[in-house]
Amino acid sequence: MGLVSGLVGAGGGFLIIPALVLFTGLDMKKAVGTSLFIIAANSLFGFLGDVFHYDIDWLFLLAFSTLSIVGIFIGTALAAKVDGQSLKRGFGWFILAMGLYILLKEIFLS
Image 1 (cartoon, rainbow, N blue to C red):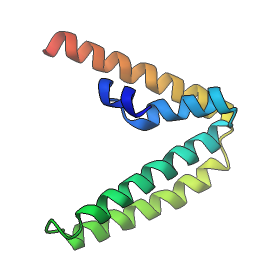
Image 2: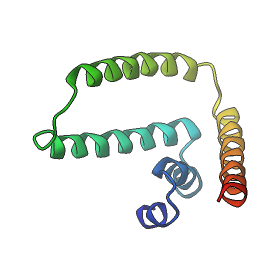
Image 3: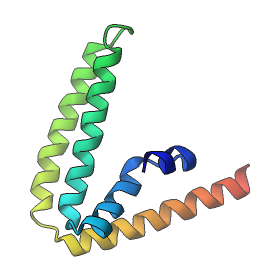
């Protein structure tokens, strides 16, 4: 997944989620949660590696983290109302729309 992500420039979630659903049989909600956990762990290790090398705007980080935590609670509440099959279908349409957008942007704006 890392090699393909690096070659095509796609985020890991776009490749990891379908791989978890297709190859491991996880349902969509667990695959999304697993992908988000992997991304969060990766981000934490990256942050810890750089925290002493850069000046960090701690106020911005606090504001961003607070908004992220609010988003977690909203997402958790919404997850109870959306079934996995609808989420899978919506994710597929989103990937298709983003792929078409990127393709058209590269063709007509490059």
